[in-house]
Length: 400
Image (tube, rainbow, N blue to C red):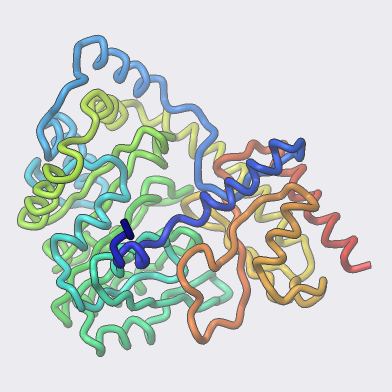
């Protein structure tokens, strides 16, 4: 029996394919320096682990309410609301098995076939594939490289709006670029959403990983509370990538529809893991701050070494755990024209494994600059330094 034609529209997170390539090399004895995947090799806070164990011991292993257990919905409404200066209640929250399900469920519930949906590109690749899988038209908007970092390309956003887009995905503290929006950029985007009667999906996966200062949410701006669905994940802040726990927070009418899809898809998010989530949200800030401090050290080392390589330009991300260096000049200097060939050659000859820009959405027609993405969340400081110095030496050998 043949598969449905719509399966041809379903993309994948190709970072996992890069991870498989690296694992294959490792099985043959090559030491791998894993910069390819946004996984975290730091321990989950002990309060979260203990809460999960207690919940299992107390029999919290059966079905639970489709929108999530009340304790977690209340805790998440309070946490997300207080961090953004907003008033959310239990009916504004639908618990999900990770952050990713909110993407597809919003699209399935709110987008009609043929609708135009704006999404960041480069960006999380699931936006693009889910829009197209459900019959929408994926309309990308890009970024402009400036001395202060990557900034939203409003020309492409406004072009999409002129085409009739009514939905827009926005990922401040972006994966893969590390881009973060200054106040005036967030305000400009919010004005466009309001003036054109649009709805915005705010992917806040890295909201709680800001290294300094206070994170900013577009949902907090006047007129945006009822126009924003916030996607929350426990994966990053609590080092819980494999636990699969997240939530959708927003207007009650949309949350109701997402919960209807919960019932029809997975019934509910794993019961005992939800109790662990409650413990995480109520835990002392010191537990998660320790994770952030270690990530900050890795970021600083990585950015310093990258910017010491001639032909590389790396902005230091304010949040998240990705660096997105421009390597256009470097590629020309050492004789490469194809970024994928460069990536594979580096992997095979040095063991340094990273992703290319093309792993994060189809490259845009007018793109000229070349980028790669390095994640520093899954590699300790010693191996990070060793791997980057190995890459640096390899590059210098190619110049000679």
